[in-house]
Structure formats: C-alpha cells, structure tokens
Image (cartoon, rainbow, N blue to C red; front, top):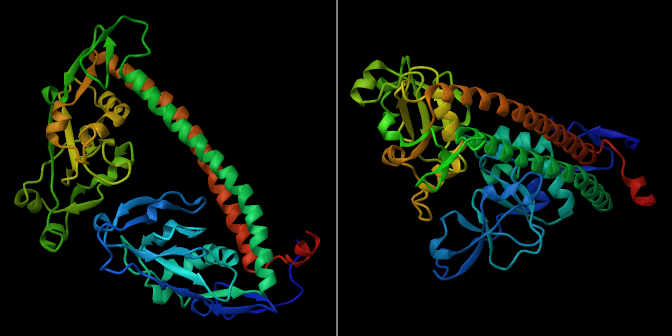
Length: 440
C-alpha cells in the first residue's frame, strides 16, 4: 500500500506528520468521558455484570464478566458502559486494558479504574484502534502519576490528541484493521494455547519425577489425597518433622531508621516468580533485624508464598543468599541429612495445585497458607542420594520445556510487534486505505 500524496505537521510530537486533509483533535472534542455512573442509593439487591481491569486483554478485549449483587460489589464497580463505548484503563496503564463494548446488558458496569469513552463525532471502530496505538498508550503512561501503581486522571487522558481522518476513511481504517488484526490475533491465541499446554506438560513432568511415578518399581498407597502412591522404598512425611518453618514481617515504611543505609536483604513475595533468589528486593539495617524480630534465613532455604493474588500464592523458590522476609513469605530450612534443597524445591513446585487447595481450605474462602499448614503438609521422601539424582533430572527435563516456552513467547512478542505496526501505519496515515476501500 502507498502513502498519502501529501502530509502536514500535526503539531504533536508523538504523532509527527499526518495526511494533509486530516485533523488533529483532543479526545474530549470527539468523545465524551464517564457519562454515567451507578448511583450510591442503588438497591442492594440489584444484580450487575461487572468487569474488572483483569477481565480485559490487549488481544482478546473483554475476556470475562462477573455477576454480583450491588451490596456485594466493590466500591469501584460504578461506571456504566453502553454499546460502542471504549473502556481504557487509567490505572496500571502499561497493561493496555482497552476494549470496545459490544451489545452489553443493561446492567453492565465496569471498574472506576477505567475511563469510559463514548464516541460522539468519531467512528467507534476507528477510535478503538486510535487509543490502542502505541503512541497514545505511551502518552498515557507518560502522563500517569505514581510508581508502583501508576494512574492517569480521566481529565488528563481526554486532553491527549488523536488524528481524525474524514468519516469514510475512519470506517475504511477500522475495516482494514479488523481484518488484519484478526489474522494476527488468531496466531497469538494459537501460540498462547501452545504455551499453556507446555506449562501443563512441565508441571506433569515435575510431579511424575518427584513422586516416583516414573520409576518401574512397586508403588505403595499413601493416605495423602495429593500424592496417593509412592515407591515402596520411599516415605511420606510431614514437612514440619524435617524442617524449621517460619515467616517474617514488614518494618514500618515511615521509619527511615529501618531502611536508610540498610545492608541486609529483605524479601517480599514477588521473589517466588523466579526459581532462585540471588539478591534482595530492598535492604534493612541490622538494627531493624533486632527491633522487628526479623528472622535471619540462611541460603539454601526454600521460600513459599503464603498469600498473593493471581498465581503467586503457593509458588516456591530457592534462597541463594542470607536474607530476611516479610509476612507473606514462609521459609523452610530443611535438615540437610533428610532433604536435598533442590529436590524439596522441585517437589513443592510439582505440588503447587495441592498447596493452592490447602490455602483455599479445600473449597472455602481462606485464600492463604499458614506456617501451620506447611508444617502439616506431606511430601514424598526418597533416600537422599536418589533425591539429588531426581533433582538433576527434573532440572534437565524442565530446561528443555522452558526453551520451547521461550521460543513460543518470542513468536508472540513478534506477532504483537506486527500488530502494533499494522495499527500505527493505518491510524497515523502512513498508508492510504482509500484505494483499498474503492476496490473492496
């Protein structure tokens, strides 16, 4: 496809030059924002369909909705969205939670973490791509305030400029991008599905090897629902019998004496997202260790996330440094004559689903593990030499699967780059789609 015959400066740095007959307008001149909210005196028994930021995906758009009564809904469940409205996340904007709402029920409500943009003098399909363009997102991020939880005020968001082509070209751009992004999105979903299958396979490999299911020996039933059988030469034991278990705390953040000039690593539950911990997320002073009674956890301990949203709770990692931890982590300092650290790490990794069930009270709403839960938790215990051999085998097998996962994720990243470039070319007027519209 060819470019337009002439361009002009847009006057906006991130837009650059735009086709000569296009306009550039702030969002507020082509779309209204947050027109409707659910009133606070809504009947407590009113049922609403609620969308949270986690229910919106960059590729798939709206991925979920939860039905609930108003009395049970979070205080952020207030913004009403209608057909063709565009919801744009104003918190954690880097997640690119943007979607067009299509034919929602009358009780459709989204989080106040979204800005609900309602097209007035712009095509809804075109507008959705315009606000999903990398340049617009980067502008949103640049204007966001905060470090750990960056957010942009809706009044600031609607000041951001958009390129505005004539109405017929907006439709042509929307139609073109619907077709082209659908092709890319299908490939992304396929690759994501592959990653999901590989992760399931990885988990089954860990579970089979660490429970001895792969061994051609006689298996003995256990009384444990999570590991119903193990080789006859193995034992099923409680972690508390062979490991010291404890957790830490968080020193007051507003006490500079606890943190300023600190040299001792202090860890939060984010560390379980890696297989091993090589450095501290923050540092505390030696005085803090004494004043706050923080545990000194030696290298070689296994750390378990006791709480956490998403997949964090129940995940484990190996501590390679001496450090202390917060209250959302537990440490397992196993007797080295009974357990090999690497084997214990891989075993608990393979029993992730079991730890999640324990933390949920096996059907309740507990949503957290405790040190007591871990002390009672049972794991298979092979002879020490066999533990070491199993750990080495698991590491080798999972490394091969991890390579495949990494390759698939690289493909996904490339496809997302292609998608972003396709949107940018059309939305910024780098290609002239009027001829494509005429010949379609």
